[in-house]
Length: 330
Image 1 (cartoon, rainbow, N blue to C red):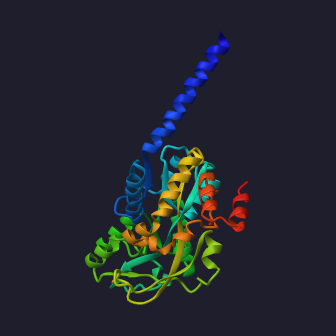
Image 2 (image 1 turned 180 degrees about the vertical axis):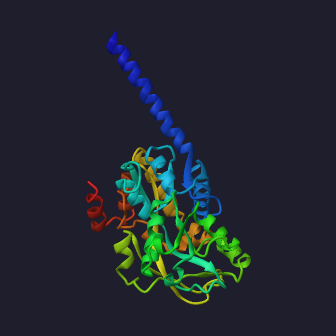
Image 3 (image 1 turned 90 degrees about the horizontal axis):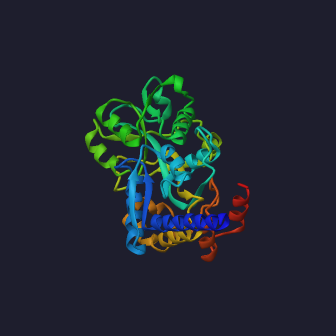
């Protein structure tokens, strides 16, 4: 009799788990940075595509920052989310986090981010060295990785946090507002953020992108924060605040999920996004930095989900280099 009851109980549990898995694919959540950020814009675009193509109720859910929601994704409380490769790596190893998020899994690369500090156009600040003694919105408690990169950018100008007034920031949008309102002399941004267009019209003298310091050679940023490299902000008709080429820093954004997501669901999600990538790139300009055949980034900072691996192998995007990188996490 006890064995029969145990079998019945096991069957009930299995049924509940199966029902839960199905429910997740009918209503999924995509974690992003706050409303107004590029992450939120892209998360909304992914949600729209998944809902239209798969009949899945999908919503972008803004949070304080990826350091807040990566542990939630790890635990399966959010279906997936957007995060810098830097923050994914720190979360996976537990560096700067209360505990390691060892169940975080990559689905693919979605955006290469050009990142820099901005200032008011009439501030006289043009390069990192000019920030000595200035108010810098760089301490970001909700994003461990960006805080470290902000410190590295200062270091490129031979500055430390002791050389500036390193102010706490509620995120990139908070920093932009601080520049417009004159509450800070410099704040970090992703150069392609839509909010910068309005900020350029609202700030005293417009806004200006601040150039790297003299120490930022080819190896500098990667040596300071893994997953970063030299980049450039170039003049663009969509970004009138960039009037000349400015040396800055680049890093990749990953779409991540949890190891608890089924292989079939992970396969279905990345397959849908990959197959609709050209339309997504047309609709959302930041995605144009990643070609359709470059979604399978080799140098990821957490393992790929096995469902994503299955899809990338199927379409010929998985290489020996990917296999070696995946094996390095074991």
